[in-house]
Image (cartoon, rainbow, N blue to C red; front, side):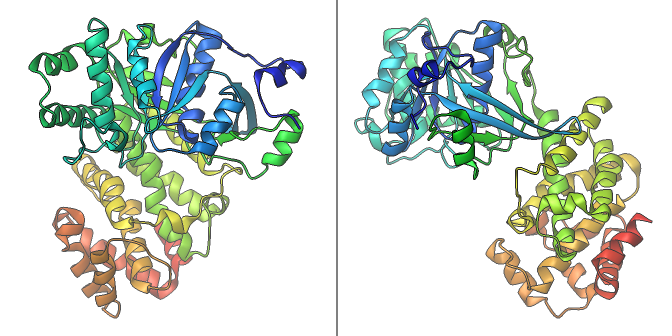
Length: 478
């Protein structure tokens, strides 16, 4: 079977949309599955439907010669499948993505990266260098860019642009999964300017001519599909860059409104929102999507379930999840109710995706910090607005406590958390919950200070221990 390329597609008489030649407009640090199933997909659709007419230069932050060879052999082409549940129906969408022009190594070909700064049409920089990628290292040297961090390399790229095209700055869209990713990236660049004693004029240019936009990304991308051989056979070509993602996608960009005209994603009907403030959308994702996971996973495991799909097929667990989202989480958020309802409905569909096997035990990783970040804000906001405890979210704390107390699962959390539960494994329910609620280093506060929280979670864990998780869920839902 021939490898995917423009020539192969032409020989097959392909009817796929293809953009073989166009100006390079985007520099992308990261060539992995997520960006190719998310940002590059959006750019490709915008090329086809709304006249963006731009190519992406993919930059490898870490050398991966075999992967780079695939980009070269396939002319940057790859096949994307979006699979899942949408509007109540199972769907699969196939697309050959043709927006990537080439792939270069930031380590082995840094001069080629710097050369991109000389292109006046290249105005946008996207990155996904993992959560650990946006980092400042005092040991980085200006004369050794190969070993510098991503922000260090970016500082040198900005310096090159300043020297050759000072009237044209960049708009940067970091997609790393950290809070305020744009602001954090800019903060690192500022530190490198100081470390390397670069000029005040350059420092001012970075601030005035460039825009570091914080972004929120949302799409599950499992990556290379298990049924790749069958898909390649159906396509009639071999694709070493094949990637799968879920149908749902959402990209919120904190930036100026003019970006809607420059980057015609909205015109193309894509789920990309340019806004002055992403806070509401971050809260929506963290509290509904992530919060629903965190608040049900321990109960699901204690009911003998193994995956999110199994949990959604279980009437009791699904009822718990849907009710807590609708009646206890959504009332704590400030976006329009219709938007929140639509997002909640999409979350239910995403959790039912038959193409993604999401193990519940993997979701329990660092459950303590996750409950604090994803569930506790809904609890405290609900108490503030409604004047009562949200009983299902409160119950989830008891389920979490019983799950970790048992010590029968492969629990992975901070050492202090595991040590706490090991020390209190034989405590009575009253003693365990009193001690757990008082762990301010876990929760940032004493949870017993929330009215009725301690007696409520104590009663809940006693019910779980005496009657079992299913009976406890039935009781809380009755």
